[in-house]
Image (cartoon, rainbow, N blue to C red; front, top):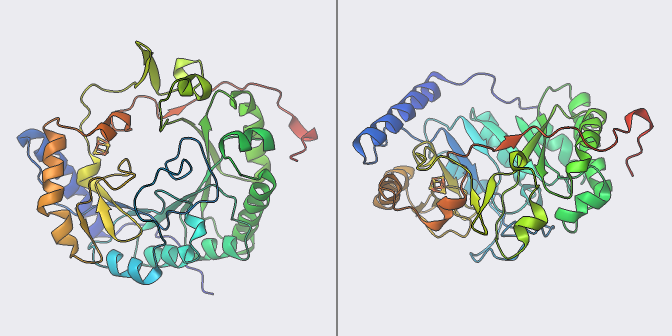
Length: 353
Ligand code: SF4
């Protein structure tokens, strides 16, 4: 199979569209009404709603994804993706569910990369060692692979990634590093995204060592987002150190620490397409409460500048925000953190399993 490389440069049309997005943001802010001069520079597309894990603060893992589930087909992806011009600069290939469950995900990556978009995919890594999947993703032109792992030992991995197996993760990363080497590709960039929880802080040093040993390119420590705030959940999962979490305890409730009235840029620069073509304004609408159209049934213009999307933008601009906005990363002061090394750094005598 021919190797597709991710685009190195963006086209004039894409850069011009980016400038128009910037103008849309400024004018919308100034006028207090939605101005959409551009098309999205970024699209998040959901390959599937299925996942093999049961993470405690994920709607899918919790069994709370009330909308109909399924897989996006390559035919439907082509149809909706090709309706957007210029091609978005970035495709984020995930939403709810594990993207690698969908066997057509490598074809989706290839089509988007060939059309001039940088494709980023976030995975729990458990399926990466399956068949030739790692080779297919590398040769499809994937720009970045985000490895969503929150532990450096089998025990802490399974504490949050419930049902996960660290030996499979180890094999999967080995396969993709090897595929990149054998195909002589610098891509995908391998980014380990480590969510900071109370139970895994002692593994920060170990994770850095393991990252080097695996051959991943960088490790980012991210503050954790809670999905549910039942009694005791914050105390159970969130680090005690305020600088390692995004919430503060205020009068007994966990409250997001961020700018008071953040301006929402996403609804002017991007959109989220669920597996069945329905469009929601952002990834915080996990259950599809604010569907603004469907790209398999309507033209892109009808959806992007249609009455439903504009009404939603107006609502956000005038401060009548739905509850999902109270847990959103727009205006957040601590998305990533720099935890100090803790625990013993095992150096050269380290055994993974
Ligand atoms: S949750 Fe609200 S503020 Fe955040 S991106 Fe979505 S619409 Fe914007």
